[in-house]
Length: 133
Image (tube, rainbow, N blue to C red; front, side):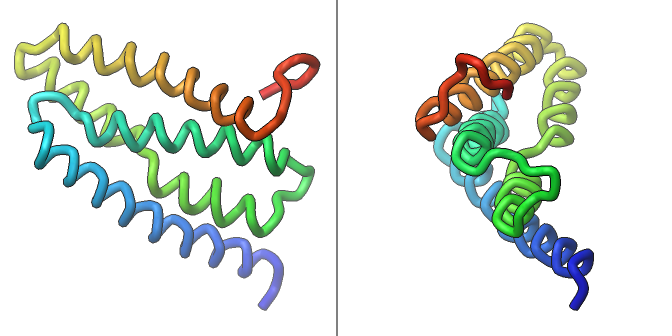
């Protein structure tokens, strides 16, 4: 198996696992918190941002991504987090006459994502001074 095929398989396997995780978390939160606001999507995107920041601080990014990076960030987190669900749910809120909730969803997702990726980075032991995210 060549390096290219190995990379594709690592991302595919990770993506399958991440997608199942997203499905489980989203459904669990919808069951307990209701569907009036996309809590599940917000939770997976925030926790995914945290993990991405932690992995970046722990592993860094090399010129050629490692197998661990491909599997975890490209695969698991790529399948776990979702811009498409976030976008669709925001439009559904807007079209349903819930413009305030749509705006809160956009602002909260953006701000919380940035806070969580930074928190993950810092908790990895990396320092923000002199480093770029």
